[in-house]
Image (cartoon, one colour):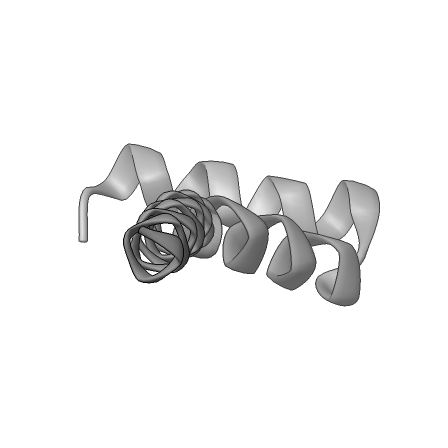
Length: 57
């Protein structure tokens, strides 16, 4: 790991506390996954709506 990054992490833990640093890390890490899941659910909803419309014909 880069020395600069390690210094920043150590400083953040000292300034804010371990739980806050871990929470921020996890939120940033999982943000893209949450966005992907949101998009997938919206697409699934649209597909189900379209399928329902075809059944009414």
